[in-house]
Amino acid sequence: YVTNREGRWVLPVKSGMRHQFEGLIHAASQSKQTVFMEPREIIPNNNRLRQIDVEIEDEIEHLLSQLSLFLHSQVDALKLSQKRMLECDVRFSEARLAMQLDAQPITFSNSEYRLEELRHPMLVLNGEDVVPNTVTLTEEKRLLLISGPNAGGKTVLLKSLGLAAQMARCGLLVCASAKSKLPFVRDIYVGVGDLQSVDAQLSTFAAHLEVLKKASKAKGPDELILIDEICGSTDPEEGSALARSFIEAFARNGSFSIVTSHFGALKKNWKEEDPVINGCLEFSPDEGPTYHFILGVPGQSLAIQTAERIGVDPEIIQRALENLSPEAKAYQESLKEVEAYKEEIVQLRRDLVESKKHYNKEKSRYEVLIAQFEKERQKRLESAVKSAEKDISEQIQHAKVDNVFRRHSELERIKQDLPNIVKSPTAPSTTVTSAEEFIQAHPAGTKVFVSAIGRDGVIQGSPNSKGEIPILSNSMRLMVDWKSLKPPMQARSATKQILRNHVNVTISPTDQDRTIDLRGLNVEDALEQLESSLDQAALQQEDRVKIIHGHGPNDTLKRSVRSYLSRSIYVNNWTAGRKESGGDGITWAEMSNH
Image (cartoon, rainbow, N blue to C red; front, side, top):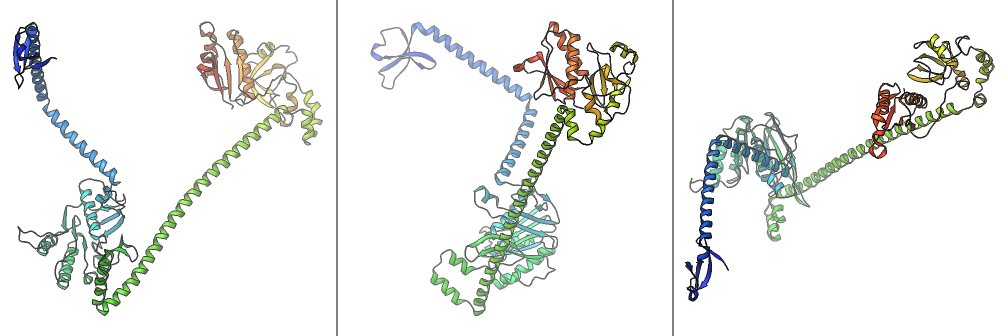
């Protein structure tokens, strides 16, 4: 086999055979049993390869040098791009976090601290089944005192409130409803957990007091105070007194504050005008803490119930109940009744909310059904009206005069006047013997009476080879035999169908698109036939007409037909046929039906 040593291609040869052929030894194995020789025959090639390697390295160094010079010339643009990319990365990260949290934008307001459907973002990211809560503070009630059972969710709610304010201040979407409102918080004073410091010679209580001292100096709605278990690490009586003093100071300074406590004395004796409002975390005697926040109601610590719930020895629980004072025992019994009533009220409220949701859902469903019914009813009515109109039109077009007389008794009186109608002049002049003489006496623009439709019309042009003259009446263009035209007069509507039998107007109903085949005709004859067919299609109120003209020499016929269609009063627009149905040799005309 062939291998490489120091950039040279060599052959492994046993040491005893190295004198068998000429070459250079470049290396040997560790056992010295094998040497790696470069045969003399390939030395020039190896030299060339080595030279090429050196040239490649030189070229790489040259390219890197050129690239470095170019990048140095673009250093300002690169720094700007780096800054923009960093900004984009931050924005994309914010958007990704908002999607994961189902976070919403909130409104800033210095007069209100309201978070609806608030959730702790870390619990949401961990996939926990989070109970959303709503917390509201106003200018009149700026301080929220949260109480409730141990392990009931007070600290989690407190941290959720602080995180929401911090996220809003950083420009992040908040893990709450879009209806939420917050002040733009400048500083947050947090006293949560054990803050003792050996280095600073601070005990747990002393470190807690340091936070309270700083928080008592906060002023204005842009300062937020979050204190967990205020003054809870000392004597309950003194701690309650000290905690009340701090709470009063927080309230006086106008800052929004949320404080948790287990002190019973701290929950009581607040006046209606005081800016302090109680709140608690709900506790179910059967299920334990529900983590639902209730505003306006103080909660109980329920220490014995919490100990029982986490599995403390029943004997210890029983002994603790015996150690309670008679007043405390009575209070516990009353508390159980109150909790039961509260649970019942909360359940009723939930049922009411669910019923309201169900009602709104059913209401929306019925509204949709009613709208669909009205739409379908209107559609069927329109369909019935169109069907009736079509039937009536067909009856009018196909009915015989005798049937009309038999069906309509009122027409019997008109039948008596029929001789007078027949005796009326059938042409404007007895001296006129041809269509050409008629049109000379009555040029285009002359008003005449058209018996076929029972109303006056205006002559539009010269007669065709059949002696039919184009007439325009109420936007309808007809080809009528010149002999049936009379001087303008007010025709009686009851005689229209009777006189139509004596007029040379052809009306032929059809159930499919009319096809006009003009192939093999010259332009003049083709346009004449096209005009006649369009007249009949207009009388039949057809929607569209298919015209077959082919291509012909130089497309003359096709261009003439389409030019005529563009000017015709009967046609809204025209389109060429599809490739699969005749292509450009066919034109579809959409009728105006006016």
